[in-house]
Amino acid sequence: MKITQINLYRYDIPLKAPIAISLGTIENARNILVEIQTDEGITGWGEGSHLWMIAGETQASGLAAANDMARLLIGYNPLHIEGCLNALTRYLPAHPTTRSAFDMALYDIAAKAARMPLYQFLGGKKRTLVTDETIYINTPERMVEDALRIQAKGAEAIKVKLGTNLQDDIKRVEAIRKAIGDTIPIRTDANQGWDVVTASGVLRAIGDWNVQYCEQPIKRHDIAGLRQIRQKTTVPIMADESLFDATDAIRLVREEAVDYFNIKLSKSGGIFEALKINAIGEAAGIPCMIGCMSESRLALTANAHFASARQNVRFYDLDACFEHAEDPVYGGITYNGYQIELPETPGIGAEVDSTFLARCECKTIS
Image (cartoon, rainbow, N blue to C red; front, side):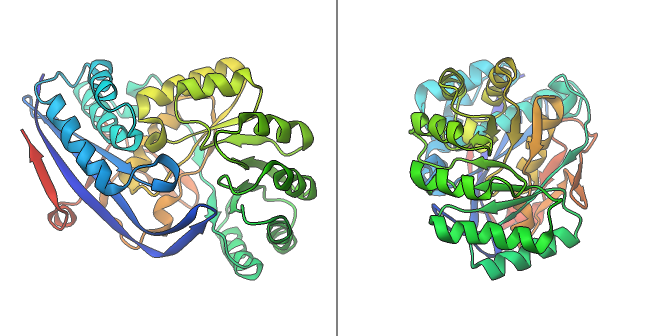
C-alpha cells in the first residue's frame, strides 16, 4: 500500500460562546483536517486542534507545516506508522498538534485495512467511558449556574477552570461546592496560572471539598515546583502542559512530581507517542486521563478509542464538542448523557460531512 494523495483542510468550527482559561480566551475552534488517500482505496482521516497557548502552534503555522509533512509522506507505506512518523519528527521535531493529525489518519488507515475498530486494532476492548464537563473561568455566580446545569444533566464529575488568584479561585470552588453539595467530585485545572505559593494556598483551602485532583497548577517547566506542591497538599497533582512526550513522562516519574498524567493526542503528537506515555505511567503506578483541546467529534472519537484500549487510562475529559455551535461529523462517538458510546465500524469510525468540507479551504498534495 502507498500514500498517493493528501488533502489538507482549514477546519474552523464556531463556538457557542468564547471560553476563558488562565492562558487566554478561545473564540473559535481553529483546527486542521488531514485526509490521506492510498492506492488501495483506503482513506484515513485525522484532526489536529491548535491551541497556541499550550502547544505553541497556530492553525496557520500548522497548515504550513502540514504542507511540508504531506510532501514527505507521498509514496510511503501508511501501514509503516513508525517509519512515517519518524520521517515527520526528523524533519519538524516540534509541531506535535500538526503531527497528531497525520498520526491519527495513519492509524485510521491501518485499522481499516485490518477491518477492526481502532480500539481493537490497538489491542484493547470496549470499556465504559464517562466524560466530565468543564466550567470555564467566570464570576463565582456564573460558574455556579453552570455547575447546577451540569449537575442536573447527571454529570459524575465537574471540571473547573481556575488559575487567576488565591482569593477568587477559592471563592469559585467554595461557591460551586456549596451549590452542588458534597457528592460530585470537582476536578480543578489552573492551566499554569499560579505560582508555588498560590497553588499551595488554594489547594490547602479546597482540599477537604472533594477535589479529585488539580491539573497543571504552575508553569510547565517547573517540575521541582510541582513536586513541592505535591508534598505540601492533599489534592493529587496531574501533569498536563508539563507532559508532551515520553521524555517528559520519564522526567516526571523520576522527580516524583505528579500523581496523574493527562494525555492529549493533539499535545503528544498522536497515538504512537501517547501509547509510550501511558506505558511509562502504568509502569510507574501513575494512572492517566485522556484529555482534549477543542476537537470535533472526529478527533474525540480517536481519543476515546485510545482510552478504551488502555486500562491505565482512568479519567476521561472528552467534552470539547459540547462548546461547538456546529457538529460537522457523521459517525463517531455518541453521548448517552455523559457516557461515551464508541462506533464498531473499522478504523476511527468518523468522517466529516461533505457539505461542511465544501466550505473548508483545501490544499491537495500528490
